[in-house]
Image (cartoon, rainbow, N blue to C red):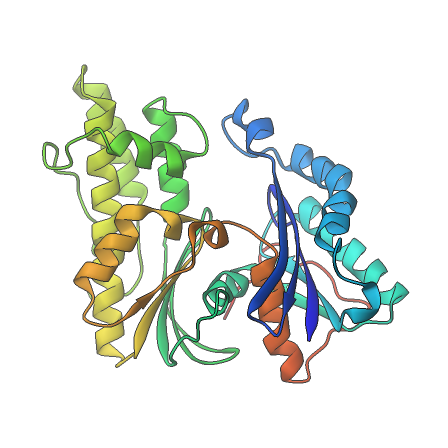
Length: 324
């Protein structure tokens, strides 16, 4: 089966064709990073207008070597995300599905991130402990089967990705914060500064707001600190908490492996630390599949279609959609 996936939840316009939920035939992404960098963050209205300009050319590129008659379904992100951005993707997906009489599948963006681990010829071993770390989300779930999740914990304030963006702004490193912090940390010493960790004992929840505030106060009170050392120490603190709580939860629930996903999953230190400290196998996608893309949406749609699921034409966006 071949599915066309469409992803417009935030500031990337993406389309992809995936065969049998595993083989990527095309995966086209148009980033808006340069547009939003001047504002130091994403401007929702600007993002949705840019999606309108690019979504049709991106879909045409993704379909360059696939005939419309060869498609079995259309999968599109319905949430969570920016309302204006989501509307662009959902409405064009409806139009295509209606024109070609194809099933329409509304996909949760976070579930799409998890399913990026089924691409590139891999087959995760369930039940798996899933850590989703993206710009606006940090969540732990036990995936017992397809569309069968046990929620364990989530951030109580800033997500890890948000903390990276805010600390990068404090240090004057630019936007997006994740890659900027990671690059700056390469030239820093993470052992020079001891930053706090919010462990929230007895809970699988996360909290990164206090860490962000600690960095702000440190920078204000100790002039002349190396931004590289601060970046390295901050990154080390975030990774330490993510890895420790994830491994503890996986062992407690007898998971067979750990699945890492989301934009922050592209962070090299996180990937290395989790692989080294976990006694269980750790699976994560290639970096280009960690960030927002449509191949993961098509992959997730494939497994929904196999279960006989499809959505009605009144399918709507859900900007605050939760996975469970």
